[in-house]
Image 1 (cartoon, rainbow, N blue to C red):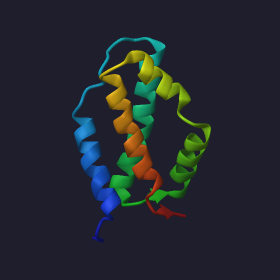
Image 2: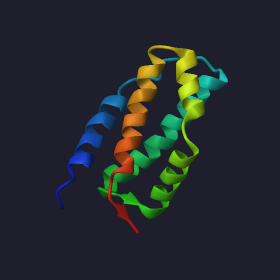
Image 3: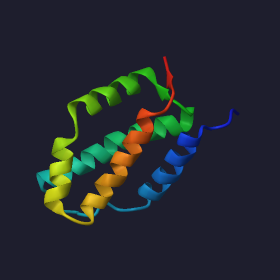
Length: 106
């Protein structure tokens, strides 16, 4: 088994903390659904990286596309929903940033 990079170790720690926190709202409105959908999408990326130790090429491309499109809807939803949703989304964005720095297997 190869040693994990510092970013993968940090990602694992942040994801473990995140996975044990419930979504701050159980409201079924569109803004909450936007955050929940993003969290689920990001979670599938993280779980893959934690198994592999790196980001596969296809997921790297999806992440690049998502980052190019921006997170305006996500930021707007978090802002509108207030705390604790803003902190929840900030943690997700931190996780996304870590993913973007990982090595990519082509």
